Image (cartoon, rainbow, N blue to C red; front, side):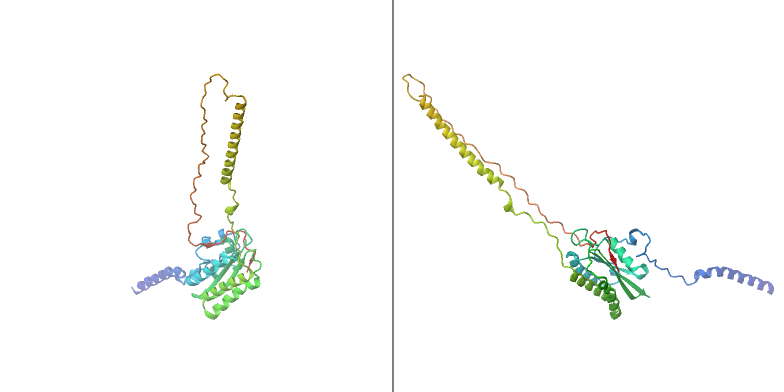
Length: 309
């Protein structure tokens, strides 16, 4: 009896062991999923992997995940002016380090996708892309790298000066431990640097032709009509006197000794109305356009950058 009990117990232990062993790898500590680097890759990816709208509410894309709204608004005010002055059409991107395969390539692809820069005029191809590549370790920001991509018409911006943005960002993060301070330091630097190289440019607007240059067509017509009427009246009066003189020479109005029936004749002078109908007044058309919500983005230039860093 004891042997049978021991035998069955052994069988049960072996069966339990067989059932448990295959499941051990499944219950082991899982391998953490890793983000596949997509930004800056050389593979043919539709839209370079980007999917955000080309027109954004802020010049900084994805900044809300890293810096405060007040910092984003401050940069908006600075770069609204920089864009309106036709100095640089600039967009900024925050992106995690695990999503970037190549920093310079990522900046160039972001430039292409957002279509940065004016499409025509003396300040065409004035696009500028700045990306902040953020590294996190156990949820804490430990490093930041700044890459850029610049349009062909911003040749005065030197690579050695643009590389200062990366140095400034790393230094500000090391000193203050604040990514927001690094962000504002870089944004203020580039705005001042760009303005030191380029003056504001405003395209000339078409001015309406002065009213004094218009030909006074209506007064001229009235003036000529008056003189034409006067000359015609003088000619008719002279012709009437000549007719009376001819009649007197022929003796049509003198007595000839025989009775004649005299008819009193008096011409009826009619009045000719020279008045012209006045042209109807045209309604005033307003040139004002309905206001639209603020929108920030590229100027539509598809030529792409000429330098990345």
